[in-house]
Length: 393
Image 1 (cartoon, rainbow, N blue to C red):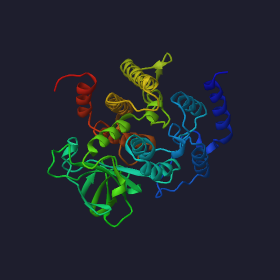
Image 2: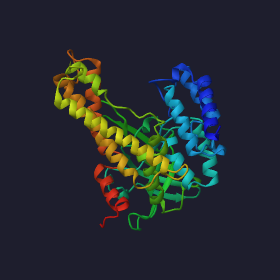
Image 3: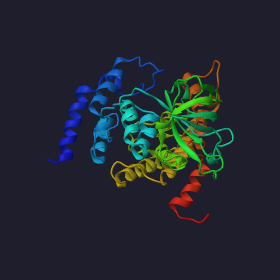
Image 4: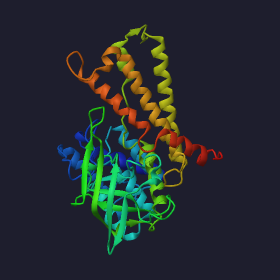
């Protein structure tokens, strides 16, 4: 028996014994936030046993809370988890964004202080990048940090800080040299959110939800030892984190079980009906098939990229392709679901609409932002043209 086959048997047996019923199928996935309670004891138990095993972050080194799995072992683990519908024990910006970035750029002290806490699900993170005057042109950011002894004193504002109201820490890009060219003079800091100099205000969106926030800093403090990389060279660190954001290896492999979107065939069956065992309307039938083919092609391309990428690494500029196609594929599914429901697909509130129909409309509205956040689709196309295809400016 090969080592990989032996690992599969071991993983299968361990998961069968240790994954509780409440951690299988849909349900809560903790982010590590100290501000969001874990109500189901099965969810808490799942997090604890997986953290002890090192499988909340399977490919991280053991000294930082991981299991040191190879990429092939990791893919086997994900396959076995999906077989029993086991949810990820932990998700969020800690495991998906700042953790991998610290592995790339953090020093030994930074890794030792922050990574084990992330792996154990003891802390949640948010991202301080965009500002009211620096969105797609992120390098125009103006939030200032001034070194004062062992601390940086931070003043300014960030916007679209997802989950900031629940975050314990923020990774933030700040300007530390206002006289340098705009892509220089930027530093990458880690900031404790629980201090008087930080104020967070959720932003209510057209969907009725408030996943994004405005974050204000008035003499907020970040420790000098939490400067990641070199002073005034944070742009390089920030760009690498965005590659992890657009398609980190865990997302590409499918462990985090990203939302699958609306069940189009089920919706078509309910609102259009069937004829001779097929969706009755030929146009909708063709649109659904085309969507399914595109979604499956994207999934297989992501999987192949993980398999072809160097051990335990996140792909480079090609991640922009996954962000671009992932956004338009999800939006297309939401458009189809709305169209299939007809008048019932545009309800906001009131009698005459089911909870599923109202939820679908809110999902549709929320999905409009997917082609903007994490770098707009236009920015992704520019990156693909320059960095992947090698086209001239």
